[in-house]
Length: 203
Ligand code: GLN
Image (cartoon, rainbow, N blue to C red):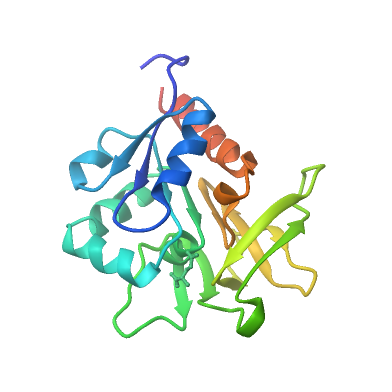
């Protein structure tokens, strides 16, 4: 594969806001595809875990034989970007999971599901992100919060009240909010940069 070919990335398409991610990735010049079966993972260099309902995506992933292949891909160093439910699916530990809910894991954090109650269940806000000049327009929809970070995890964005809502650990990137619904592309760009680095280091 040559350096110049577009990054081949997939969006896990079992449930959730798959189309929105596909659109952003394609706008950024990636070759983006839907991932539903273990074979689909062999064709991609990076994976997006969309927002949706983490317990449903978990159940479907296990039903479709996707859980272990995705865990293996994460362990092998595939860049992954998770938004909202995708953050929950990447987390090693989940507070407020439904009975029997599992995650792919890999990200050394604890997340609290549905961390915002009542009127603030869904909201949009401008957030500063470490190292970026312009703030991010972030849409939170029944979002989780990162409540504990392992030593290798870097917080990228924090709410004014103090909750961590974007993190990075090696090639894993995750946000509690949905940049793909508010026209924000920089997180997807960052994910694609990780994909290019992973490609370069594999050569
Ligand atoms: N509350 C959802 C969950 O637990 C996440 C919501 C979202 O992805 N917008 O999976």
